[in-house]
Length: 417
Length: 99
Ligand SMILES: Cc1cc2nc3c(=O)[nH]c(=O)nc-3n(C[C@H](O)[C@H](O)[C@H](O)COP(=O)(O)OP(=O)(O)OC[C@H]3O[C@@H](n4cnc5c(N)ncnc54)[C@H](O)[C@@H]3O)c2cc1C
Ligand SMILES: [Zn+2]
Image (cartoon, rainbow over all chains, first blue to last red; front, side):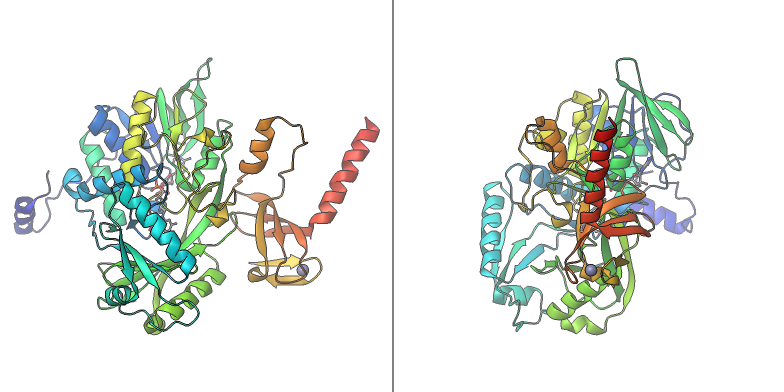
């Protein structure tokens, strides 16, 4: 059933009892043309684009928990393409273009809201960086606007204007950036993929890989038995190292934790996404009214999906410093996700040394925005056995060949990106 | 999380700086390039016990080798990195002597 005004009215008269399920719950088949491991944003979207763009419909997505149990439902949903490097902007901008039409494309309201992302700076050095990045964006056809202090304070009028330690000097705004609804992205892609024939198999953990005598990929071992396929795409985010290790591939990745916070609902007080140049602080307001914000990584390898208290304190301090009016807002929830931090802060969307095995991972804490664009490129790579120009820079060989994509210049320290 | 520094006792996380995988070892000067790439970029990333370097930067300043579980965060052992290195070297020379 297509979701539309007519179907809504029809269902309303039937007491909303006739809505069909969003996607089936099939038994795994013995053989598929392609398997995607991981039912997060990237896995589901890859299956959708394989079916939609390349006509490959005999596909399964294998998810060990339930779809959307990973980072895709734990993130703060910022979607932007305000990047610095010429080899990263095209991928993110392509992704943003797909976001702009995603609700129509999927026939599912992903609540993409182009409320802008405003990066506020506090020092002359940060201003120089913002000018440079803004120019790089404009030269790549991305929208970027410099705001002065008055304009920043007008747009976000809850900021303390007289911060002595970190004055507000201005901000770099990307008007087309914004936020989306995380669950809706999962469910939208899942339903759209399922409608094209993709089997979404939950509660199915991949425990090993099967290869023929030439070393080519032939399938996977799972908690629900052996499943065969000549092409396997890995999209397991925080567990990229674990899954790739099953075939003996070690990655330049450390798994770290990133926390996020949400307050009780309050009246609308901020209608954009504001980021600050201190402690990675950023904040937006959800449609329900909760203030959603976060800060830095916890900073050490971890697979615990819970955060530590020093970061809670850090983030609260930063909030009080810039947005003192929120001092009495009560925290409703805070949580953490396991993010696969790479040695240059950039992802992998690529072939691997094993024929028929492909990797989409290393998303750091920035992979939500990239879901449509990266999955589109990943599907292309799996079908053509070649990257699309947008994802060509994001291969595994870039480290040994001396071309890491390191926008911050942080070096090979995952907790510094 | 608190780390028991062998010199200062149990201290809060905020006093420590994380460096990461304690098993990476600088290759010999003329080692093949793959070894150098591995040294700079590739890491063990276990879901479980992890041997890692921390510095007690807000305390005595010592470099420590910490054995910590990355799921439970339980710390199984802490010793000065220097000691670990010394015992490694003495083990190595012992092995050589035996061989
Ligand atoms: C707190 C926080 C805030 C963030 N904020 C933003 C943001 O504002 N903007 C942004 O762009 N990005 C953000 N991110 C990053 C973003 O959430 C991730 O990069 C992205 O969701 C990762 O891709 P995914 O959706 O495919 O991952 P996931 O949703 O984690 O999907 C991976 C799936 O693989 C499954 N899996 C793992 N191992 C196996 C196995 N062996 N067999 C079968 N299945 C397996 C897991 O169960 C999981 O469901 C944030 C992350 C966190 C934690
Ligand atoms: Zn000490």
